[in-house]
Amino acid sequence: MSQTVDRALSILPLLAEGPANLEQVAARLGVHKSTALRLLRTLHEHGIVYRQQDQRYRLGARLFALAQQAVESLDIREIAHPHLVALNEKCGHTVHLAVYEEDEVLYIDKVESRYPVRMYSRIGKPVAITVAAVAKLLLADLPEPERRAVAERLDYPAYTARSTPNATAFLQELAAVRERGWATDFGGHEESINCVGAPVRGPGGRVVAACSVSAPNVVVPSGELLALLPLLRRTADAIGAEYSGISLPATVSPTNSPTDSPTKVMP
Image (cartoon, rainbow, N blue to C red):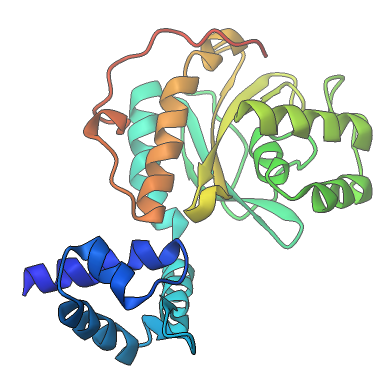
């Protein structure tokens, strides 16, 4: 039975490349055409594959419906929380998880710093969208027309002298974030608070959330916070892999990975 299941599942990656006929499926599986036909008929009965009028087979609508249902049932916060806790235990600083919903970037999880100086932020509270590292990551992943439209309708409060001043500057920053794959907020919202963020990518590589590490200047300067970027990015990758149902090597896990040397990057 396990061999039958294995063969049936092996058909799906083939059909993901495009429609294939019976001979092509049998050749890919290394089986007789009668065996391939039996497998295809079973998958067809369940809507997993569809037989076209030209007798070629392609992936069926039921498979896409199941995939969409599976994605919609996932709770990124539930998946991410153990990883965020592990990150917090390693670095000691405040860790956030944020998502983009209905034109707002919202914190959906937070693990408090172990230090007595703590950040004023709450789960469910919108972030300062024009300066926050998590907001830059989420908006940078939007298609260019949507990214531009969002930037042009935002207000740009001058929280500090380092706040983003206008849409042109914001779009330039988003382009840079999109290129390098991480973001910072060094005193853009509060003079004394620094933050570095990394994207959480779901199926297809789209950014589904963003996580960050934040700390006051009196606890850690910006350069030392940037040194945590490798650990932060591994955490984000581990969350994204679990969300997408991908197995990663144990060395990728933030709880098992060796200590990295400081990241040589500029703010």
